[in-house]
Length: 125
Image 1 (cartoon, rainbow, N blue to C red):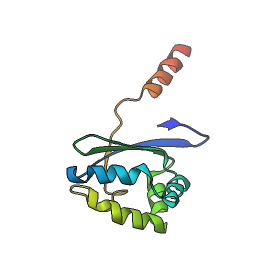
Image 2: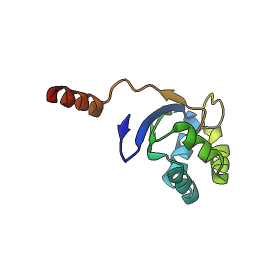
Image 3: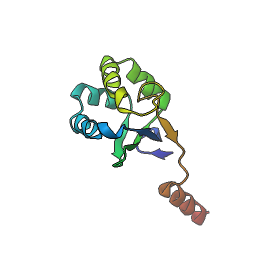
Image 4: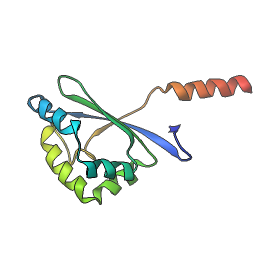
C-alpha cells in the first residue's frame, strides 16, 4: 500500500486476456475512451489507471484507489459504465462477469518504495 494523497491508496493490478483477433480494435477503442467514461473513472477513485497489452493479448491493468469495492460499486451506479462494459465484454477470453469486476487480481509481492521506507525506518531506530 502506498500513500499518494492524504488518504491511503491501495494498488490494484489485474489480468485479463484479449481475444487475439480483436487486439487491433481493442487498441483503437482505448486510444480515445469516451470522455464521460474517463470522468466516471476519475470520480469513482480509479487513480493512476493504466492498461498494458502484450502482443498475444495478455492484458495487465493497474490503478490506485482508496477502496476497490467502493470504486467498483461507484462505477456500477453510472450509466456510461454499463454501456462501456457491455461493449468491452466481447473482447475478452473466459470472462466471468463484466471486465471491471471479472478480472483476476494479482498479488503484490514486491514494492521498492515500501522496502526502502522500512530500511530507512530501521536505520533511524
